[in-house]
Image (cartoon, rainbow, N blue to C red; front, side):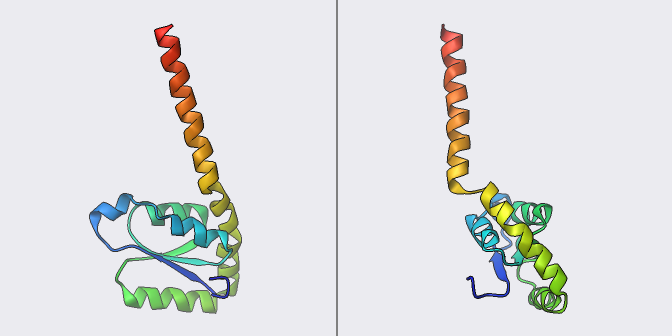
Length: 117
């Protein structure tokens, strides 16, 4: 993956996948490569907000090819998308998410103890 000029994160256009946020989005972003996200819903929303990807409609081969050509033809765009990737990748590290979950659980447990006490 490190040898690639760009990386693709794709999800089928099924409605239930629109809420899905694949871990490969963060793994790919962490490699500091520009991304192309072919998905609907949460994954493209996060990728665009972080400035790491071009987004295309899943299953649209012409749009995918156009995105690849755009990254080839606009090296400054590719560089900008790639540079934003490590920040997104580190924000969503599994270890960081575990820490956040532990913090939430500890807070809930403390609140429960206070109510009983």
